[in-house]
Length: 89
View 1 (cartoon, helix red, strand yellow):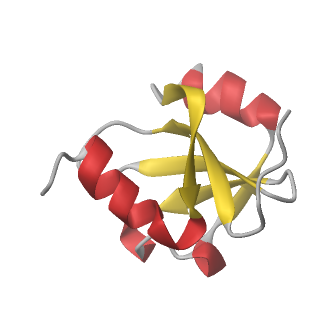
View 2: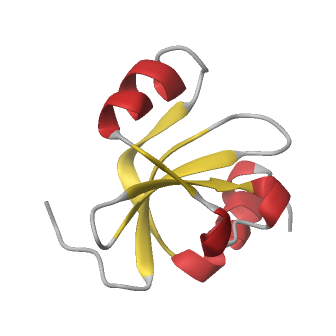
């Protein structure tokens, strides 16, 4: 696995809909959920595990896996959602 720079993240999955939740792997290797409601604030995340991602998010809650994972700046996750998922200009 390629190492991610400290200010970058790898987007692994997202919840479809008007208010997407992102599952992101940080440079430390931690998986965190980032929320639309908080503006994807890195201080308002919740830790998750790879098992949770596979069994609950993708397996039960219809999250969409991003394959290959998409790299983005942590502070630009909101921009990613607006441009790529919500198709806003």
